Image 1 (tube, rainbow, N blue to C red):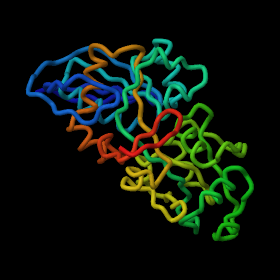
Image 2 (image 1 turned 180 degrees about the horizontal axis):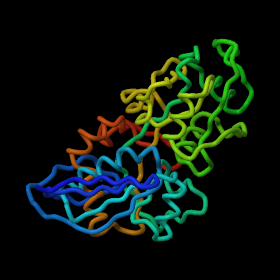
Image 3 (image 1 turned 90 degrees about the horizontal axis):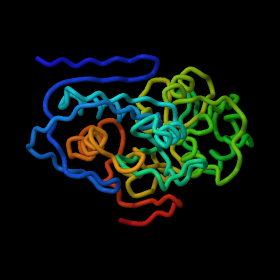
Length: 303
């Protein structure tokens, strides 16, 4: 019987497993869920996918499932942030660069040399320590907190307690999405910066008065709670119609067209098995569930 082996070394997730792959139709970065065929063609080889920590939980689970169907394939998933993902795939150091932002939005990246493969949508929400006595903020209040104009929770309806802002590091796609939608071009306060969604989640849960922001996939944890903005709840339904505007596509970029095992993995990401099961289960939104489309310039149009 084939066995599944999961190895985690220094934040690198390497997953290998057994069984047969039902190969999917040809992949397109802008397409929705595909139906798996009954073919049993297996692929082998190694693929390194790194970058966005917002996408990491989903990429790890899809890698596990893919490798259960392809015992000869090894998919290594790493974090590091969207900036690292785009940089590493551009240099050829990784086969896939995971990003929460369009390559066109990232300075120093030649987007013309990269192929975009959208695989899901991620919502991002402001989060606070669970003891903070505030459950909703206006966007103006949220902006004032992250720009340093509001420094105590009593100023926005909470108790007399210092606000501790935790930010993501420069280069983070999650940070870029949050700031683009909330700060309106204003500079964020200089404060503690962290490299990953997971680290932010842990720090906010253990720091009195803390506030930050996380991808939806990280919201189901003890010690933190998500905030409403202008009385709108951060949930799947509100992302789908853009009522909750803090969201982004999850991109998996390749340098040129994807081939071989890389293409097979990306194709598998768009099968119904993934889009209709793993994607919603882990807190993401399927591409075909979106009622709107957003381009690299930020323009939103109805589907």
